[in-house]
Each structure stands twice: as structure tokens, then as C-alpha cells.
Length: 108
Image (cartoon, rainbow, N blue to C red; front, side, top):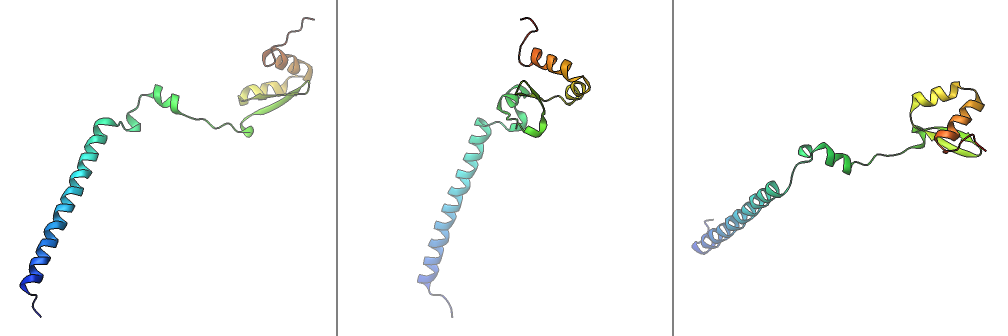
């Protein structure tokens, strides 16, 4: 069955309208890409100073070694420091921890 002239006309108009819509969408897409290119900067191109300002570092209890002095828990992040403190006698370790972390002195 052959399509009639009316059906061909309707089909041609529909295709023409469809092509206009597609062109418009493509044009808007390229315009948006161009806008982004001019206004935005990729994350990899940011200076390290800005990246450091935006960075968020997670803080986990397992990252610390905890020493208890006078009922106060002192968290030490540096593993080498924690190992060195563990090797000290308890009295000297507590004195160091109170002096450096709790800002206490030996003066009465």
C-alpha cells in the first residue's frame, strides 16, 4: 500500500520539525559545553594550595596510640613517637606526656 500525498506531506513536516528540535538541542549542548569550558576549571588543573584548602581528612581512632595519664587520654598520631614513648618507663613517659601534651610543668 502506497502512502498518500497527504501522508507524505505530514511525514515530511514531522521530520522537518524533528530535525529543527534536534539541531536546537545540539546547539544548546555545544553552548553549554562552551560555557563550562570558559567558566569552569578541571580539578586536576587547580593549584595544590586550593586543593589542600578543600581537602577533608578523615580522623579515625585506630590511627592513634592512646596513653592514659591522670585519667586523661592522650592521643598520639605519630607511630614512631608512640613506639619511643612505649619504651620509656611509665613515670618518665607520663612526665613527658603531661609536659608536652597537657602543658603541665614540674614546678609546684
